[in-house]
Image (cartoon, rainbow, N blue to C red; front, side, top):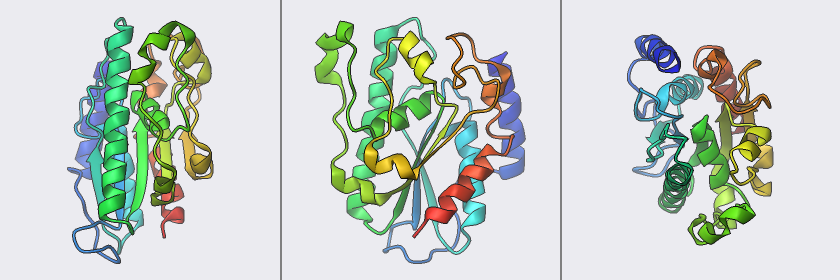
Length: 238
């Protein structure tokens, strides 16, 4: 059911928005750099590469709101696996995403110090994005033997380069505790820059028990939240 819903929404969004690309007229960025760089992590098993359906809707909405600035988008490179029966495999999957998101942020900040970086994610991708800007990742006691594999926090100097963190359908703290994952909190330097969206009835983010996602979980690309997120980011750009 979820896969069918995603397919229908992907078709609708692609028909309306077209293919995602770095668009908009260049403004103040250094040569070879965009004014705004979105780094987005798609959700579990999303069918629309590279940033998924929600990421596509958000980046198109942002591009529409920042005319006169160049907007570039890059996807977080990670599997976004749906094999939740393999807890260790999912953990590796998320760690891959965190490492890639942090690598991209460091690279963009060093090459293009005047670029506004926007970090975003949907569902499992929101987990990746949250951990990527966490002050620390507290590994549960029963998994302490894997502590060495936990990604390190971003160095403090990168916080000034990240203009906004946008999260859609982030698994709730109750959900995260139930699956035995480390608690999720964006770092102190990012709290005022972060916006979260949870549709009423989305059991992934509304505090419900772990279970198959409700239909509401796949509606962020069409319910207006991606437009609201783009407005939030546009107000924060330098």
